[in-house]
Length: 461
Ligand code: ARG
Image (cartoon, rainbow, N blue to C red; front, side, top):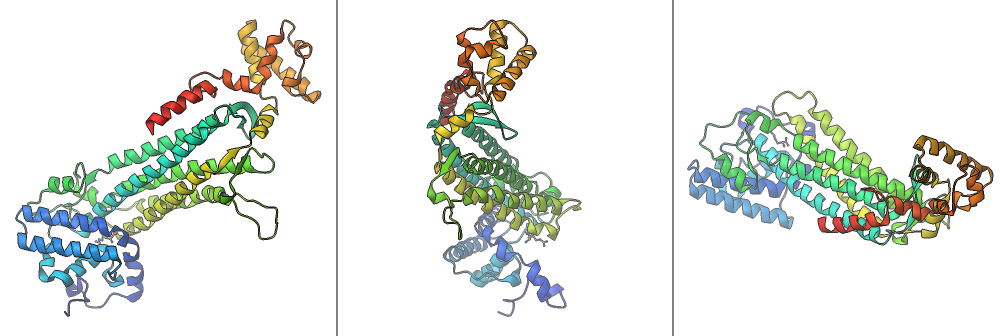
């Protein structure tokens, strides 16, 4: 029992670890989240060692049973994680000695913590990516539901935050559907890229034992083993990829949140939220503030920060493993937790939003948003160039502005001041709904297009 509190390297060391170093050197409070992956990988590694006759099957069985007991203890919250034993790998190995005795000493044959930690971490990121994929799908589903109810809701499409052209609220919502679709592909690509198992690379050079890395890789659900032992233990691209995909996804949601905040503002009044997604003020009794949207907008800062930190840790790091990399897990875990919260609240926020249709229609009419439609009408019907018709339409806008009229309020006689040869069919182009529904080009905002896109998206999801 005198070994019970000793580190595995105690025989080589003359003095005890400094207390302050132990505090920052230990990562157990963070990497205990890897326990399931660590135990799963240790079980497969042990099975492989036994299959290859590197260790005896009796020892292997003891190890596997012991590991299962440890998993059950941790699951139930009955396991004491010790800072002294640094990380999840050594905590579990120490506990295994306590449970099965000296047979535990055979488990760490032909591996190192360097390949062990990357294997665990890759397995964890695989699961986390799958969870994020599900969460993104829910946000997409809710966007689709909201879009379906708003295919003929006309709103002002904005560029530079200035009224540009009339669009369908559904089409606007579906622009985010496309962004999230790309986010899913990013996470899926990452899953594909990281699908190589590093276990068996050992410290950095491989091992002289006759291990079967393909067996280990396959049993752990990887496509194949990694091909270079040095790269295997020093590669953290998969963590960077995860953090990048998370940052981009959080950025998309931040843009959606900002749109919603602007559209909900008293200046715009285009959308409202259910009270369950608002907060009041401690002093102003009238207030209803869109805090959830503001949190979504802000959280992306955390995701950018974690990505930046990870890239900086890796910059200029020589081959191969260094302790610098230990902080990768805090960054990825926190990036994951943040994005997960953001996705959950975004899905709810989208459900809680409703369009103030009359305000949307009113605002779609402000700012001469059909000026391009008039120019297009002249090109199509009067055989003049777009630059020529653009100039005529600009003059018409100046006239309407001076007379404080909407384009749709102009009479045929007034319009004819700018182009003589016109009949009343031209007046239709100033109708914002008509403008929207004329945009039938592929990917355009017409109701017909949007409805068929919704049909297509529904099959995809
Ligand atoms: N906890 C360590 C990490 O996360 C495990 C690998 C330690 N290897 C070593 N040689 N110190 O990076």
